[in-house]
Length: 93
Image 1 (cartoon, one colour):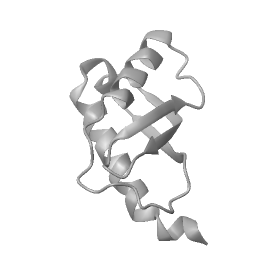
Image 2 (image 1 turned 90 degrees about the vertical axis):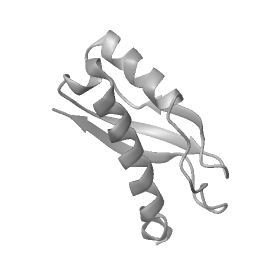
Image 3 (image 1 turned 135 degrees about the horizontal axis):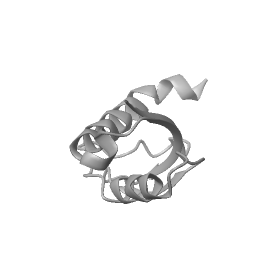
Image 4 (image 1 turned 45 degrees about the vertical axis):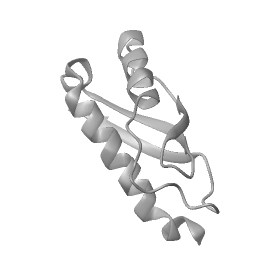
């Protein structure tokens, strides 16, 4: 299906999120696994992001939302025909 056709872009986003999480002390030291939805534009910037569930810690959830909103743009924009939102599992241990 079209999912595998866009897997490379989802992997780029996930890598960028994991890098961002590892730089934030509160997130880096936490232990969580959470699903997120991310919308990207043609410039490679996040236009919207949401947590699909909770880590169980409101402060941690808030820090994750801020990190997702402030994600540095990717060098490559989302393919124009890529289905959105892009659903990803983010983990930290």
